Amino acid sequence: MSVQKTAKAGGFGNWRSKMINPVLDKEFRLRMRSPRAMWTLFFYLLAIGLISLSAIYLTQELSGRSGTYNPEESRVLFYFLSFAQLGLISFMAPGLTAGVISGEREKQTLNLLLTTQQSSTTIILSKLLSSLSFMVLIVISTLPIYGIMFLYGGVSPKQLLLVFVFYLFMMLVLGSFGILFSTLLKRTMISVISTYGITLFIYAGTAILFFIMLSVWQQAVNNQGMTTSSYTWIGHILALNPATALYSILEPSFSDSVYTINRWNGGQTKGAPMALWQEFMIIYSVLSALALWLSVRKLRPRLKKK
Amino acid sequence: MENIQVNYEETVPMIQIRGLSKSFGSFQALKGIDLTIAKGTVFGFVGPNGAGKSTTMSILATLMAPDSGIAMVDGFDVTKHPHEVRKRIGYMPDFFGVYDQFKTMEYMHFYGASYGIPKAERDELIPNLLELVNLSDKKDAYVDTLSRGMKQRLCLARCLVHDPELLILDEPASGLDPRARIEMREILKELKTMGKTIIISSHILPELAEMVDEIGVIEHGLMRAIGNVNEIQNRLRVKRYLHIRLLDKMDEAETFLRDRPHVNKLLREEDKINVHFGGGDEEQAELLRSMMSYGFEIVSFSEAQSNLEDVFLEITRGGADPS
Ligand SMILES: Nc1ncnc2c1ncn2[C@@H]1O[C@H](COP(=O)(O)OP(=O)(O)OP(=O)(O)O)[C@@H](O)[C@H]1O
Ligand SMILES: [Mg+2]
Image (cartoon, rainbow over all chains, first blue to last red; front, side):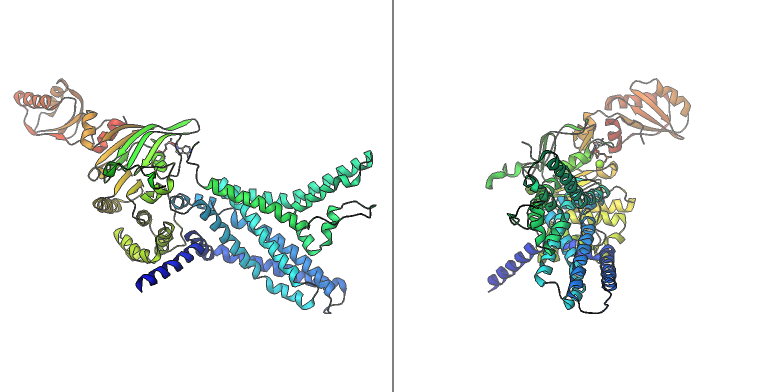
């Protein structure tokens, strides 16, 4: 009897200790205890609340038919909110993750953690998971606002779900980049700046790159009579941009128009091989996996020499 | 996988360091250190600032890779089997932080869990450890409300949570007031009786002297001397310090002493003369005889026990004045 009992308890303990390892447990506790967590949540909700209120007000004003049922308006509102939320997430994720390792290094707790039995993978993934959980909590707390739009219609639950999956993915991507910089760079300040720098590049840099490439190639086509189809690859630059990827979720036809850019004369336009956001996810899955792998490798000094 | 431990039965030393070197940029912090510490030894690691004590200890704690040479803990190479090494060591860095939002108990539980100790075991173990370091009454206090000395003791308790065989303590007594130092020393003595091997670095040599079995003196990244305190004293032929007290004729005695053989240096105090003496027992006896026959009224003629501090200063050429 007693043997069975201990075996069972052990089994449960194992399951629990696998699900919630000490580092994760610590991260959860400490994060929720810090006043910063509360302020982050507070300002996030305040920002998203203000944005949606003004958006509602504006759409009502512009259409001039206040208070009436209008799915079209509701859809515009949904788009607007989706982008606003993406912006807020992109602003929050680097701030929450770019200090997780360097912060411990600065507080001189990292060495103690590194001499325990916890593996580098456990430490890195726990840091990521706890940051993600906190962000998910925040984003879920904004769901009631989306409820308003469901009342008016114009948005399908499937679309909403996809948008939330996309948010989760963005948190994962920016979170991995933040953790990588936090591992590689000694100072949190520099890590935070670098992570915001990368984030800015992902948004603005890729957009600028796209427009430069576009104008260069268009000129080349005009001057040398090249075929227009030779530069459809430029559309793929937009697959690096989260904003356009999100737009392709909201407007599925956008993917086709991007990949078949400027084929104004041909009727033989083929559909895009995959949606823009799908390509986005594939590219960034690889990048963030790479970032996490590097973080795990670089957390502890390399001891073995070849 | 079974046979990664080189097994020499009981004879495998707790620490084995061979030709360990480490550079930071062009600066050579360790220049080939050799050190062997047997199991159950309390080893005092002394040396001036920047000698390489913390660097050596970090390498032993698997936090830093050496450039060349090997370091083994209980037969495990620190670079090849860091996981096995971490199981066996409790490391207390010279500077460390705490998670201030944790309560003392949670802090201990976190590290206990990080070493894979099941909850039930921790529940029993942690109160005992807090008892050992006299922090039982602070078990529900937030860590950031603890004083520096308490944090230091907490960190020591943390080192012990997985019952390591080897304790690597980098200046565990730094920043503590005299009373707290005595407490720290008592704790270390208790750990010694528990059979732990301890390597402890410190600048507070007299305090180390009575509890360490061996000392190792490191300077500029090289081991200058290893052995027990007396051995080292002899090997380095540390000069003797004689305290001579006289009833009167102090000035005369001073002139007299100055001309004697083996007298290197004189230091006059109100009622006594301190002599920096280069000779051995026989020369010392001869000196006393000559003073007596000259007619000095000697109250006391004693050899000052040159303590660890003197040894240290002597070895590192920081100065040679008796204290
Ligand atoms: N991370 C580092 N980067 C560059 N130099 C370092 C680093 N760590 C140590 N050093 C240098 O290596 C030398 C040895 O340092 P170490 O900390 O081992 O000395 P120590 O014996 O512990 O001194 P102390 O008694 O002051 O603690 C010093 O000159 C120090 O400047
Ligand atoms: Mg040091």
